[in-house]
Image 1 (cartoon, chains in turn purple, blue):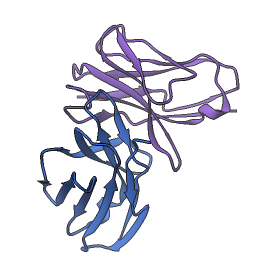
Image 2 (image 1 turned 180 degrees about the horizontal axis):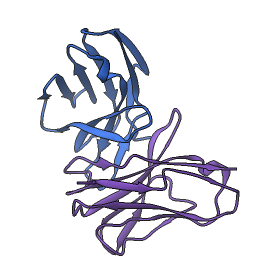
Image 3 (image 1 turned 45 degrees about the vertical axis):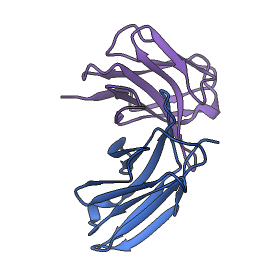
Image 4 (image 1 turned 180 degrees about the vertical axis):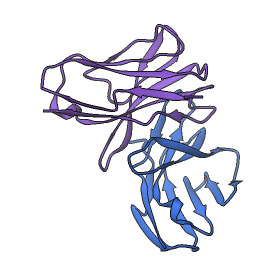
Length: 114
Length: 110
């Protein structure tokens, strides 16, 4: 059972480039979310989804887009990367949402924007 | 900010000792969760405690919640080298968002 799979694990971008971080889960979880982790700041919620076709903003959504066309996938798009988006990105999923159950995390995607 | 604040930021203890870390918050919560993160890895869920619960156990882990003081503590008994990790509290306020603190870095000295 793979759980939550994130790709790529490492990525280097130049300022202004675009890219998509992929996240897939095989647990049939309705809830999926994206966090970024920066030193000294903990994890901050970027976007989340409570089901296919439904997305909403978290604490730091600017510069990021998401979509949820299937239950399994929740890609995070950076349309025009900035150095401030250098971070470690984590995707997480849950059966009942964060107000009822635990989050299962992927191993992270480490992004550097030059 | 609705972020939880963990204390201490870093903790080093000898193997076999108990480790205690605390999380304080300012706004009433629906539940509070503790997660562990090993270096370079994703977070792993440890325990969820609801606002109407006062204490929960899981193996060597004991979590308490005092809603009157708006604080929680995580106790790890009989620590092992494998417990070396960062520990985060995460707060849920009854919505679909989970807010993480900045974490406690625990080092177990063999």
